[in-house]
Image 1 (tube, rainbow, N blue to C red):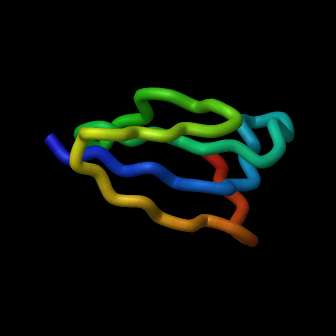
Image 2: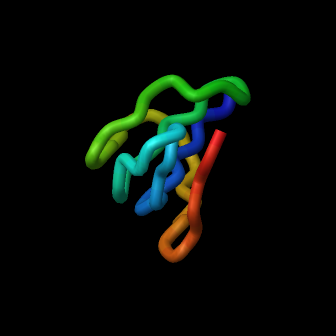
Image 3: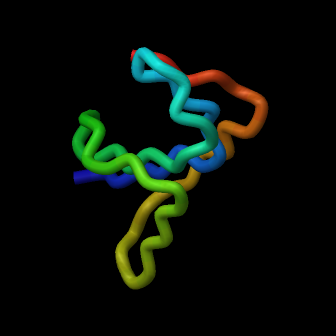
Length: 55
């Protein structure tokens, strides 16, 4: 199962939540946090700085 982290996303869900990191596991959102750091687990990071993320 692939793990991806969207970093620095300007998140609206639907209200503005601000800059957040989003953990995506198997194509589904697994976590939304101020900062997500994974160590020892293979994952990719997508820098979403400047992008607006909505459902």
